Length: 409
Ligand code: GLU
Image (cartoon, rainbow, N blue to C red):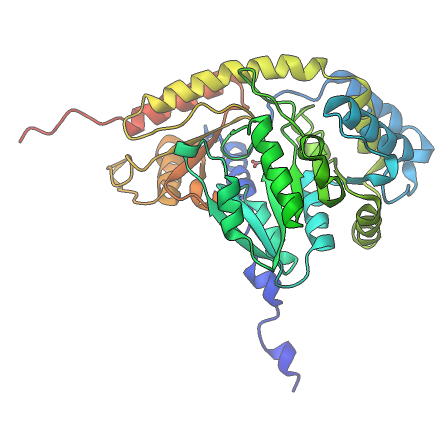
């Protein structure tokens, strides 16, 4: 008898991997909506704006070009790799050669590929928490060990060099750094980014820096790219970004990784077995997006800025909910500790995961529980949705979470 076939058919890695909490909530909210339910989706971080028309037009034109219908180089269209290198240099000041760029199916794919390329089994990866849901799963899928470093609102949800130093071991291979942060909206000041980058370079570890929200900063906060402000790190850094958040292109699935050329070559070899080239139509759209500059995102950012205030004020007005004012991205990350145990719609949720379930059932509002981000007792709310939906959703939350008049004793 074949013992292997007779037991659980799933490989250990498939058994162990958890579904993305953000996509799970998003899928549930969209399915409920499609079935006619009046659900407000604060779940996945997804701009409500349509992709700018000139980008869509470029994609339509690309569809009609027979060259689009064929395989193209795994690493990306040469013109797009050059445009990403040039845009990065213009934007953050990082000097990039086109052969350092790999075009991927979204930023998520770039991150996955980076972990697969850099990590050996047992390598430790420093992961400040709260973290985006996919980082620890991707680290584990590469055989790595995610070492969580907790941060809280008191420290602005920012990890310190002291914390990093204390977690360093001979097995530490890399740090995952993200600013502006998903889920907290924290933006590290330039000197903090430089200090962490210098520390990582001295420690001899790699940094995977996720810059997908680089253009979404508020109140004069400044995004800086770690290898620019910590030049010693240049040979040990993978920069990840993409068009999803900047150009309202989540569904197009285009991101990229920028790494030292030998690492990029290895990532290309891996991708050549995995997905080959990213769809040429979306690469053409991305080229148009980058060529078109940042005027559209300036308009979107002004709208997010207004919505950010609305969400921040409405959440903090609810007794038991507390959130810092986010400086970037499009999320408010709120503690709901003071709400847990309260009766809501005849139920008494005691964890943020349960609270989010109750809020979906009772108020038809979808939020992501902090558990998925390594921060139980919190919720993440994306305010990248239409103004009417935003205010209606916040009204519902404040209604169902409001503390009623005390019972007559
Ligand atoms: N990055 C977005 C989020 O955190 C999109 C969903 C996902 O891929 O996780 O909501």
